[in-house]
Each structure stands twice: as C-alpha cells, then as structure tokens.
Amino acid sequence: MWTTSTPGDAAFLDAILRRAPVTSALRGRTLVNLTADTPGRARDTDAWAVRYGIRYLDGAIMTPTTTIGTADAVVIYSGPEGLYQEHRQLLETLGGSHTHLGAEIGRAAAYDVALLDFFWTAMAGFAHAVAVAKAEGVTVRELAPFAKGIAAILPPLIDEGAEEVERGDFPGAGNPITSAVSSMAHIVETSEAHGIDAGVMRAAEGMARRTVGLGHGADGFLRVAEILGRRHGI
Image 1 (tube, rainbow, N blue to C red):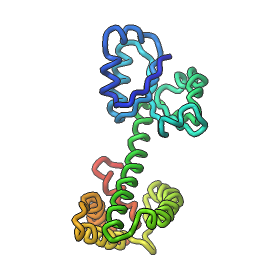
Image 2 (cartoon, one colour):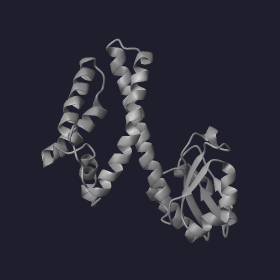
Image 3 (cartoon, rainbow, N blue to C red):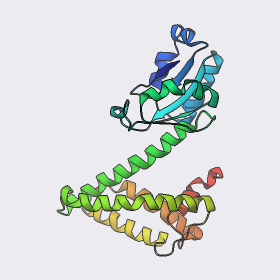
C-alpha cells in the first residue's frame, strides 16, 4: 500500500503521481489518497488508477495535521469496502477514528467539501461579527462568551434540521424565514454604515428572500437548502 497526503490539492498530487516512473511503480499496488479535493477530482483520479492497474481509495483528514497519531484524528475514506478492510489495520496507525463512507469513490470528498463549507462559512461569519463589533466599540474578548453561546445553539439545531430535511417539512413556528430576513437586513445595514463589506450576508439574505418569494416565508430557515438544491432535483 502507498499512502499520500500533500498540503496542496489533487493537482499537486497529480504532478507527483502521473509520471511514468511513479505510475509504473504503483501498478498492482493500493494507493490511498488523503489529499482533499473535489468529488469530481476523486473520480478522475480513480479513473486514472483503473487505467493503470492501481487499486485506489480516496479519503480526507478532517482534523488538523497535529492530531495525526493521536486519539483526536478523524479520517474518512471511500472506495471498495474490501480494499479498505484489507488495509484497515495499517490505516488505523494514523490514530483516532476511521470511517469508510461507501464504495462510491467521491463520497469522502463530498463529506469533506460539505463540512468545510460549514466550517469556513462559520469562521467567515465570526470574522465578520468581530469586525462589526469592533466598529461599534465592542472588544473581541467581550464578544467571545456570547459568540460561544451562539455556537452552543447549533448542535441541537443540526439534529433538528437533519430530521426536517429528511422529512421535507420545515416548521417555522417561532422563527420563520421572514424573521431571519429582517435580522440579516439589520446586519447588512450596520455593516455598511461602518464601511464593512457585507457581501456574504447579502448573499445569505438574498437566498432567504428568494425562498420567501417562492411562498415559504412561514417555514424554517433550512427550507433554503431545498430551494438551493432544486435545480439538481435534490
């Protein structure tokens, strides 16, 4: 088995692997790629591996590199179940938890992209909140305890939201999308009054307003996910 994880993306990996001497050396062996990229690139790499007789597992490391070798590491994989089980004992020497997500080679990358979407959107929101607070004379230290309180609200909302999406039912009693639109507008107004770019919140407000315009103003906020995915039949 040959395992790789680079600090770049699949393009960087391709520059290493897709050279005749390396490709020839990998023929008949198992390649485990933990260099995160898009689901499409995972499928492309798999097609290349099949073409050259290389057994392939795709994956991603979902925790900081400093967790590797510790109990805090989280690694996900996709590809043939038998191939994963064959090398599982060796893979687990990386420490932490290891999860095989299915045979479809792009699933690990799909999880990775979706979860990083959540993470970086949240971090962008926190960075923007800090800028707005500072503009209003609130220090980061003063804001932080309340920001952590907001973060603590999210876990139960994620569980509830998962059930709503599965049911296709988005009850908005107590907190409809129309209320979200109003608070988003306040954020945009306050930001721009201080000359702070509100592009991310304007985009979120636009998605919410589109959902309201389609007749879902009384629904819960995650109705937005259905509207976003509608063009793909999600």
